[in-house]
Image 1 (tube, rainbow, N blue to C red):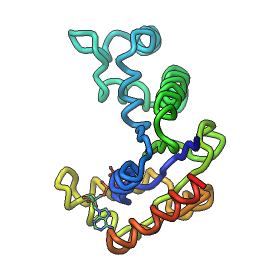
Image 2: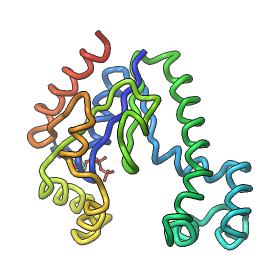
Image 3: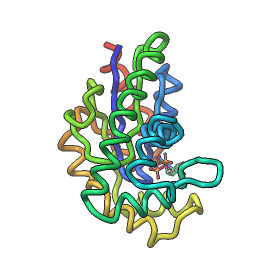
Length: 196
Ligand code: ATP
């Protein structure tokens, strides 16, 4: 069983490529989804309430993410507090889902959208697969989805690692800068290497 982390910037094609891997038989998890899920866990909510106060919750006791972001991203110290609470929970849930999916899939692929990325920060990943595409192409793709303006996408890109930084830590690089067929062929090659 192999666990791979799939990394790439906004609009690079991570979801598209995850689907291709899923069709070949990979189990898929998303660290973003797990990051949202842990905020619903009672023990995480308890620690968040103790650290950031009751103001980050709605009337039903659920975390309001923009309020949490406001409380946690105002200083580096507060961000560290947040990470200290959520990271262990994310790591535990990530390992739990990998274990579960590995019972039936030869490869588990985890989509990773944000955060610091290396083999050290992704200790459960046997390999790192980076998706690269030119910035103008990524902006056009992300804007075309209709949820974000060009300015939103550019602001997001400015906060993310560059393709070069991702490629430097990757074991495999998929260049998603041409047709879907060309991407599919690269996915097939990586799949063969991972299942060899
Ligand atoms: P985000 O991080 O913003 O969620 P993502 O990395 O998951 O993005 P996708 O959602 O897979 O990226 O791709 C962005 C858009 O570009 C989608 O609409 C997708 O259909 C399209 N796209 C991806 N790859 C290609 C390609 N090779 N050719 C044409 N369109 C593509």
